[in-house]
Amino acid sequence: MQRRALLIGGATLALAPLLARAAGHRLDQTPAASGQGTATGTSHSSNTATSSRLAQRKLGTLEVSALGLGCMNFVWAYGASIDRQDAIKVVRAAWERGVRFFDTAEIYGPFLSEEIVGEALEPFRDEVVIATKFGFNIQPGGQIQGLNSRPVHIKQVAEASLKRLRTDRIDLFYQHRVDPQVPIEDVAGAVRDLIAEGKVKHFGLSEVGGATIRRAHAVQRVTAVQNEFSIWTRDPEHEVLPTCEALGIGFVPWSPLGMGYLTGTITPERKFAQGDLRNTFPRFTPEARRANWPLVELLQRVGWRKNATPAQIALAWLLARKPWIVPIPGTTRVNHMQEDLGALDVVLSADDLKEIDDGYAAIHIQGARAPEASLAGSDIGARLGTSSAGGHGMSPLPANRKP
Ligand SMILES: NC(=O)c1ccc[n+]([C@@H]2O[C@H](COP(=O)([O-])OP(=O)(O)OC[C@H]3O[C@@H](n4cnc5c(N)ncnc54)[C@H](OP(=O)(O)O)[C@@H]3O)[C@@H](O)[C@H]2O)c1
Image: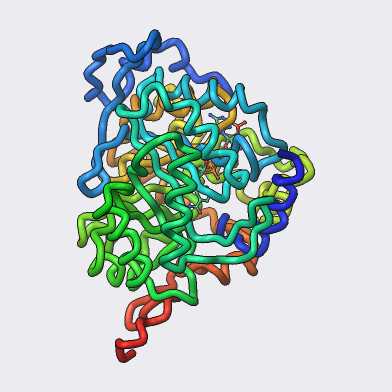
């Protein structure tokens, strides 16, 4: 696992685009009580375990719990991998608390996150929505050799992911990164074939701009777009959220907690472990963390009034933006997962939202969200205010289409 983690860590820089308070007051609440007042509280059994029900949201036509669980961090990104059985416990604890939406990808590990998710959710498979992603050339030994969204490869990846996930269908299959060698129409066509075969239920796109979304959607309905979005990373507001709204597509913010910073636990003094990607991210230098700290204080101020933690305010802010937004906070710890779910209890008023947005506007966040080389591979969002309007995005046009 260690060697694979190193391989992928190195690859991340190239792929890049790829990339408090621990115990809140809500830890003593039953999960059934969570869910912005709309939770049903119905318990049901599956095997011997029981689970509560959280509020639900819709991504396009796909119903999911209003918060999902990001399953990347068990096996890479922010320091050492955790033990496989511990990771399975986190996934099952999330299910017990009503989480029904789990996010993984072939590249996480690689392969290991899908294996963990598959094993953990096998007993509850029919109750959950599993999202995974394709789009890279990964050797059996774990070496990543660039992007690959060729249709034949997408179909091979689907078969392999199905095995690792121990299932006969992938509920939501995202292209992880736009492949500048393959027209998005061909990618959408390949996923359309998989949907026709029943192996995939819904199509998603990650780290994409408006032009790519529209082109893909014209071939195969896009159910969800997954881009980085949080209080301090606003890029999707420019053109992606309006495109999703216009087309009835759901939006899944990745890194909704700002890779942990918005929880208030990443002080300027904190040292990251070797291999932690944040060592290479401009926004995580000690200077940038110090300069951006007023944002954490802003979340703390609002949180004190609401009896909520900064993490909960950061997630509640996303939930309040649109009813078709479903954040997927990532964590390796049950207590953090439980705290994050407490965000469903936090109702932010128009005044609260204005206070957060005005406070954010006055701060001028320091440091890019990812290294320059990574952002260069992003279809959109590398710089706030960039737009694909008038262009066709990073994906080449099909040979038979004039520019
Ligand atoms: N599509 C893409 O390209 C893409 C890219 C990146 C991520 N993702 C997906 O998005 C998910 C979430 O993104 P992310 O993991 O990068 O960032 P995130 O959810 O913004 O933050 C994760 C970090 O926050 C910490 N954390 C979580 N809850 C906490 C709490 N209550 N208190 C203190 N710390 C807390 C975690 O540490 P602990 O483990 O200690 O809790 C972890 O270091 C990933 O798991 C993955 O599924 C997708």
